[in-house]
Length: 497
Image (cartoon, rainbow, N blue to C red; front, side):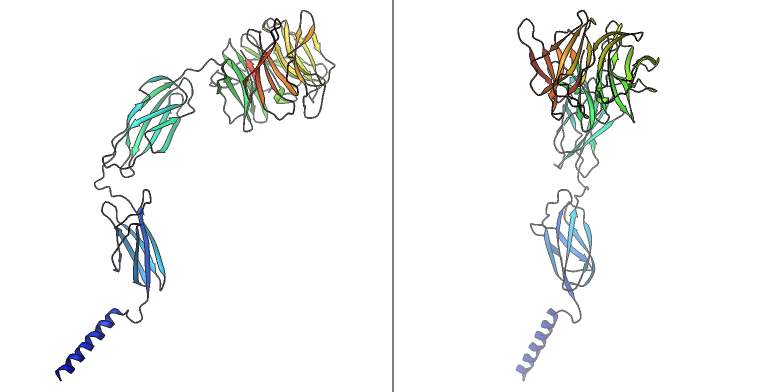
């Protein structure tokens, strides 16, 4: 009888134990899985404690930052991820029957015991450094007590305006700043951040860039849809001096006033402006009467030798205006209604050369008037084809111009064989210059060099599509042969003073 009781007791315990391992009738379950990563660089975090409220199992992440919580009753939970040195993170989860709910925890480092970086120490350039290039490498040193990865910001100011430029997310202790301007004092400061504490700042240091170079050449380049004016030197170095956001062209420098005059689009009109050689102090000269003619690309104007006045065309009229915009005076009007496209004022102020043409740019004439508006020299007329590029020699006894000797004319003003010519007032003879021009190209916009021993010319293919190059041309002197050398490529409308 005793054995029977033992058997019955064993069976009861076995049944009760079996029942305790089974899920309660009517309850439904799902699974929660997920990953824990660093909020800074998203690397996986291992050994992170994950648990929930209401309570479920407590699990830890593996080497890949992953975890799984099985057999979670259906319902709404708040899961928490905990790890030393990190701020705990909570994520809400809804568990559905037979489904897996995914969570991602991004843990931030705790700032409780984290110390801020040491303020950066500036290394270069040295304080008050001068003659710095327009591209300057800034360098500094910085450390962090906790060896946290640091990110830097560089703040740049200058003494010419109120601009403040901030360069962000720098991961190394040096940074090259480009696009600086000449003769400008700059101030810079570096901040360091560990992503935990507030950024710390270096001292402020200053440096000054190189003085503006003596660029004797001016020319134009195309940037997007705008003409942009550049300055250049004998070695081919070049500097942009007008903004690429506005359309500016046909620069003409006057050394006496140390000003550059140029044409700029202003609304639906084109006007004459002046500026300093470095592109500053832009001033509008013309107002009520703009510069205008058959084609803006072929319009030209001229300074007087003193740099106090400018002459310019407005269709069939020639005007004179003071450089400050006052004293607007009509000097001349063509008798036949032809447009004045170009003008050049002799150094002694006694003669003005004019190029006039019809509304299509043809039926061209070049003649010279005096300051009273009387024609004193007829240089060319009755030819076909394009003509342009007037430029007096310093003595006023010679005049450069270009002519398409092919005589070709069409609605697009295309030229086929444009060459440089010179008119001699003492002999009334026209001679050709630069007969070594490459076949199939055009020589345009010829200008005398300051000492008149050379010319500067724009040379380009006659296809109307190829790039234009500014060429320095030395004529054939004493049978030594002429020479051509490209000074500036992809450039046009030159001036050499």
